[in-house]
Length: 96
Image (cartoon, rainbow, N blue to C red; front, side, top):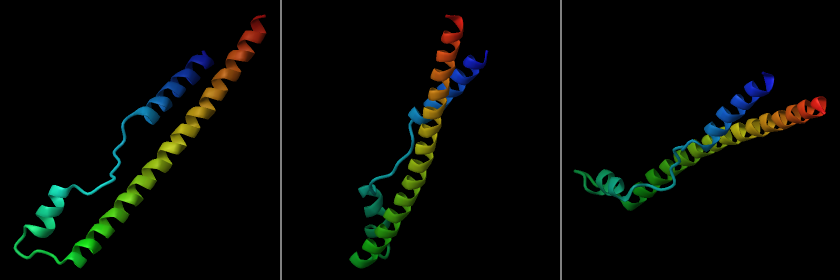
């Protein structure tokens, strides 16, 4: 029974690793044009660069946090897989 509960935990953890995650790598050009250029008061190139740099930093920070969480889940799945294999070996050895 203990083996099956470990296997269920491993399965759930593996699914959380494999489930699609939202990552942001670029600014949408349509949003950039709409937000910075096609407005009542268009921003200067320097202001656009500054704002996009801040946006890119925010995306980087969000992506980094998501990657750290994903790495933690992956490590947990590895530990659970190791425990599961050890339990299988012990079970097989006890039946032999």
